[in-house]
Length: 113
Length: 110
Image (tube, rainbow over all chains, first blue to last red; front, side, top):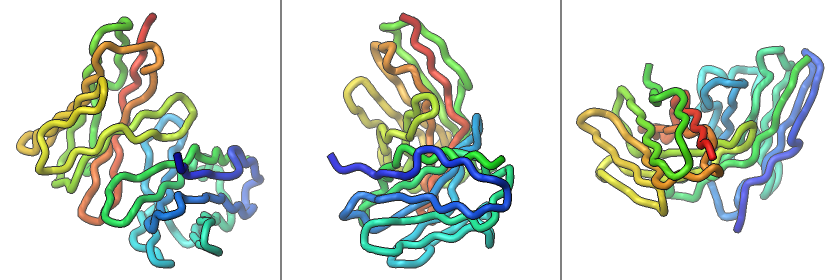
């Protein structure tokens, strides 16, 4: 069964460093999403992406964040200058056109020291 | 807050019993979805119920939706130890964003 994959599973970085979180959505999906979950808290929407551009973004998704689909398979989330409060689990999801079900990857745990 | 709220926050039951979790929300929805998350792991989609539906079943799972009360419930029948997890409701708004609740932590005691 096709699934969303994410790499790395765990990323440790120093405050101020740039990180790139990678996702490979399900191949025939056209809508892509990033969410984050700070430990013990709710899942929060960050951004949705369709047709090579951002569809929606939340207040969390400020200028420090960017997303890209550099090729036909990867979908990346970049955090330019990480802060301690960026430590969280980051989930990528994808969905088919006209289908509301979003399929989630296993997540990347980002730890900012 | 526009986010869903689940109750109870935590639920501990004996294996074989039924578990019921509730979710309430404040604004209109396109659909409402339930997810499971095992400790520290990814989110697994369980059921999607559309705003014009009242009940859906999937195996041992039953979801109801009452749009007049802006609430939904997830029932897991004949619970098993493997059902131990956190369960989240997430409502899809008009922008197709999923707005998540805080979750119910379910513990099934063997």
